Length: 406
Image (tube, rainbow, N blue to C red; front, side):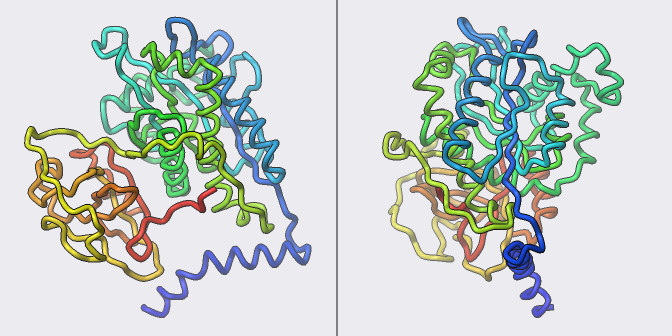
């Protein structure tokens, strides 16, 4: 078994090498990397409405700027737009555009809002990035319903969407049965987008989430749906509608795309590619706090020595994720904290198999490991009953596998 495990760990690298070799000798034609950019809503569908602006206008401006930035800096990338002007494009057609273009990545840009009866409507803020999955929480369900409900603007939506009802909980079954084939890469990219929006554009982090968006389910490539911020918050609306705000958000999205392109571009195109370079980092040196820690206890954890305690050692009864082999393993990350939490901390909600790793000055807590992504997805489903914002991470030798930084 050990021999086969060792061999299997080299298969992806071997396949990538064979592809590059085949291209070099002309056996396989090289291709461009294709990214489809989807500006949410459009035409008679305004999306979320603010005091002075609306979702369809801001998302189109952001998508067009992002597309121009990619095209001007990355000649090996072909940009496809689901819309490049103020027109209504049905959800089904958006997915078809991406699929017909044989896209390698799908990025759908949206803006969030909450019901007018919500008492926090004018103060809620922050970015969320979604990948395909079940709604799991009432909040995720509300967002998915709002974005899916655009199909109801189409007169023949019942036939087009096989009777899918965006307001029905039973429709979750559609997404439960959907394959998770590309979920790993989608989650990686979603986490990169979330981090860049926090770092570069200063958005409040509200997490990487999974929900049943039809447009993500219907696309056949790694896909994410980005909620840039809440337009119902006047301060956030002003930022998103401003030239400065859009420039920073576009730079954040571009940097995340560069990381994805640096990691998977050569495998996809079949040719060696120069590494893409990030922009805006020196101008926006904000601290990143990827996942907000819910304050469920009035008791504050005591301060500890912030020096790394050493691989495998215990901090307040919780062990560090140990170094292993070169084979990747998967954990479910549940929260992050600027201070070490004791094993019996209320924040950990009595979970017993919690481990931690250090990243960016934070203690990040996770449970695992799982040897394959499917098992991690099953564990994620259970963990989200207590930690709705949990997500999957990949670890190699005790360190989180990150994209190749732009």
